[in-house]
View 1 (cartoon, helix red, strand yellow):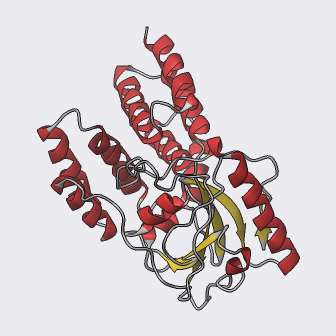
View 2: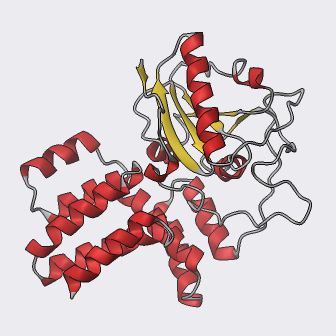
Length: 309
């Protein structure tokens, strides 16, 4: 068992998953529920999710903190009776790690059970294995404290059917966005990439397609990658651009955006024109993934500009 206490953790160390495939939810209409209010939302406290439906979980995490438990390989989810004890202040989502490779990659699941949280669309690693009940309650209290710090203090109705899934609330996606979403759900990265490229060709200002393309491309590049093997190669050959780019991808996928920027920007001055262009292009992709309002993006953009000029 590995336990990672939250302590004074904040959410800026994690990559925002909320735009992974679908655009962010529209602003609530006047009088509708807003994150942080005390009103309830439909759907059970306990539900299951897949690669294709996880966007609903991200939306829910703006109302209440969501515990995500990965199970599989003969290991059953163990928190389905524990989380409802919090009366709708915390939700639980169970994910079968054997059939949802995108979520396994995004949460860096190495074994089951693995338990994480999502607060305001951002992931927080919690622990692997199982905890004693008191330790588990301590972790839940830390999650609630973190949620309160980020104004995620709503509640959801405790339904009779605790495993009921939430009704989809998203607006229909544009055709090429939907095509990319469906392809990703099937693990078909080339088709998803082509769909976003087509959307961008039709509308170069489609910022959601640009961000989606950057994110899908990242997942595609990391498909089948062994982190331990890559990190070993990177340590042995610190000037190899190909290997350092893969390590940077792993950093971004794990929420370590600062590490990815530092790695590539430190390498940048030592490279020829072709190498510098590859680094610059990849960093621009990371800008799209993280979003322009991310403080780490602003700092990296300033440093890249200084290196270029």
